[in-house]
Image 1: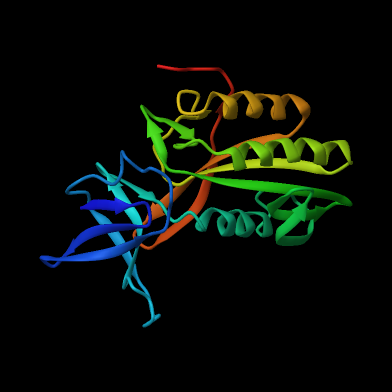
Image 2 (image 1 turned 30 degrees about the horizontal axis):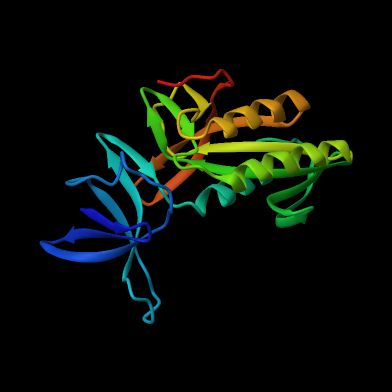
Length: 220
């Protein structure tokens, strides 16, 4: 398997090479490697240039979900099932605030909250890290979440680690020190920063447990 660009990968299926859409624009360098075992999702759209979506990859024996659209829906289902708030009255996706559009807006117990969700696929020595490539959009979201607090909203930043087998979450200081700095500022300002791992099975994924968030600077 190889990746000609960030949108597609060449995958061997029954001895034949097939060009597949990659549902994640991150670098994924530690995942998209030759001989990696993958799971594909077949599209029912005959107009598409690619027949399959690449959605899951084995890293050794650990299955990792790479579908970047999935974390938002996982968090929505988790919230609706009472996983974060016990008394939810409204859950809406894609709500605009200031210069940003947050992934979720929730009303619960008379309170109003904006939530931003980040999918995590990078793991180094049992530590999940984000981002795997610099993201100014992610930094802007954190600054906007701090502004939400100033106007009386609750603000949450949720990192969905799309695998099991990690002990903690940490900003990827080596790739983008600014992200780690602003993440720590956001937490100090009162933004609730959470990380959750997932149980991943072939063709299936769901949020499992909360994982400790480490705000310390660590560059190797």
